[in-house]
Image 1 (cartoon, rainbow, N blue to C red):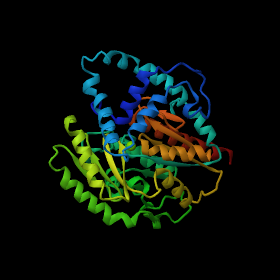
Image 2: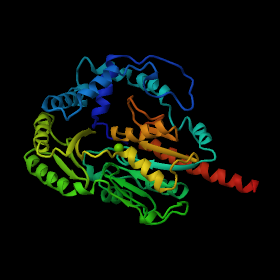
Image 3: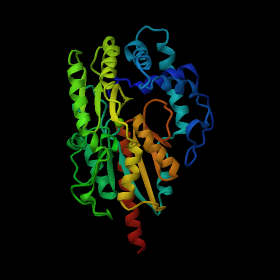
Length: 383
Ligand SMILES: [Mg+2]
């Protein structure tokens, strides 16, 4: 389902890291919750070093490190006659299976997850790109399937449900088209309650609108215009205005031009010290320097739903990107609910569980809805 010719920077980084240091076997016993972080034998030291090289705000040297890492690991090199090609590909499955011992499949652990949620209100948080839709070359064409839409609709009928995306809220709504959801766009900087009030929501959801970075709107528009102008000479470069952040997409740009494009972005950003540059999946993103992220958005939404300081809530957050890690960390620190990382590759993550791709996300959502229906029927029998 996911386009195989698109490899993501994080996936490349971890592929390189795991190729450098083999993941050793630990226990085959699956725990609830599973051990997190670095407690296993996974060699993440080189991965961390690689990631630290990718921090972009340190100037053009680090920017080049990011571009070099992306280029060196690009599929066109891995799949070529390179002597690296065979060992890396041959060990992929083994590495993934070992990583899964730390982050088991949420499908395999479904019964344990629902047992842990007993007596608590499940609240669903779903990222969009790479979680509900496949990653595609043209970000304007990242459509979700009708089957996925109906699965999300059913979930929203069963539990309070929010979409949390880096995209502009209007854009993600145009893809999802479900009025009964909460939408947190621009990495949570633009939050709106459902247009159609779900029956299980305590608070007056449809009145909810929260935009913590609204003062940055004119600045974001200005930097968007500047980036469009600067990058129009680079074929394939695409600048997307996500309202509270701007994305510069590298997917369709010739690899030879990546460094020059990254440098153009950096030069534009020099005039905007209140904006910062972060990396995503073959994308550079420009955001306000406020302390707000998907994790803060998750906390804000839980509070808005009436679950502040509650023990009877069980949030489930499903996402595939680095920006989702902020939300996974919040859940880990609160000791509440679970994070599920969508990935076909081993990655360092604060999520407890994993799913391989959007098709597995859909299976998980279906099972959750069926489980809810069955448990309601059983309760009715008892009463
Ligand atoms: Mg995503």
